[in-house]
Image 1 (cartoon, each protein chain N blue to C red):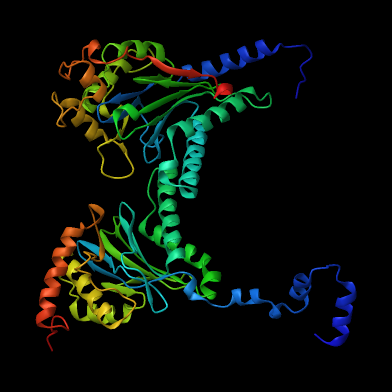
Image 2 (image 1 turned 135 degrees about the horizontal axis):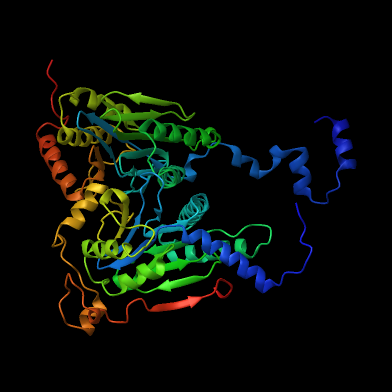
Length: 278
Length: 273
């Protein structure tokens, strides 16, 4: 192994590592995690039927990731273990998205700043569906352990800026799951690396469905269910509006959401904390 | 211990504590030695579980009584649970350990399913439960025995199956029906007369309620339906559509029907010769 023979400043080291991780993540197709009236939808382009980007972690908590498969698969399994041990030792309600996102941030931060390891080339989302829409949480985590709390939706992967810009005008957290999925598919088309022929077979869609009677709210959709969902012009489920939106703005929840129907500016970051401060 | 050994022990032992010294030389003199003896009164005992399989599914039911010796420890304990989407588990024996086994077993199945992205096969689940019961063998020898009854829908074979266990972790597949727990002798005798391979899942629910009634009739540790307090058996149904606990109102209705027929013929339906 070659020894470094010259001085590299910490700033340069961090910059190099971040550049390396970003380059790896940029190869991945984007995944959208967005709120809808009855929960949270995770949707991404994925041509594999068995290598998932979206997964269940616990009763109310879902996971989505892009980047190097073996690395985010490790993180996914670690998250399931963390959640299951916590839920077994205490109670199922003691497992929260906030706790899990914090643990992931610690882990990613430690790996990023360790000189002995290469940084993980992953970007991920931990989402928790609450008993009411106000309690929904979406945390976006970066390769360096930085964590962001997203109010409406999160986009991860190579073209996250382009997809996020496309989604900003069309997404509404008070719309139905079908509307939300349609808007997300359209936005994923903004990814220049892919998204040209997004058929139900090439999509991975899962819901964290608040209305599901079971304790486990995560539900993966089959290609047939995705096709049914995006074909129907009118959703079968009645759209339920957010309480805050209902009191603040009395206009009807519509399939074509107007930007002013949301109580606060779309994609406003509620809080952004660095891993060290969390 | 002979005198010579005793003398050397007196000289060699460095402790100034009498209790520790006696514990090393004559442990049977200490009151704590009794802890190793079987003492089933430490934890309440859960009693009778019955299962009936038909061509379209399987029904698992348990009474609601837990006992400590001759005392009723709890009137409305739950001993039958859904294990995952396509299986259910009922437990008889030491209640504290048994409920923990169920809790661990449910996490075990869910954990596997989440990590692997696919559930275990029904045989895999049954074997996993067997090794968990075997892990409890030490406690079973102390008197804290846990005996489960496991049922599920086997999607690979397209049929419902019943598995019974012994304290050493032996796992045995049963045909048609089975019962475990203190009232199981009477419940099994009852099911033997009531069971028919042509029965459907609704008949199976009635069979289970009848069998539990017979168990409660002759076994003091099994609780009968408590109409005054609205306490009825917990019944879980597992079919190709999944495992669900049957709503209490539905069970109350079936139980009232059974009680009405028993008020005419207390020993239950008559078997033809």
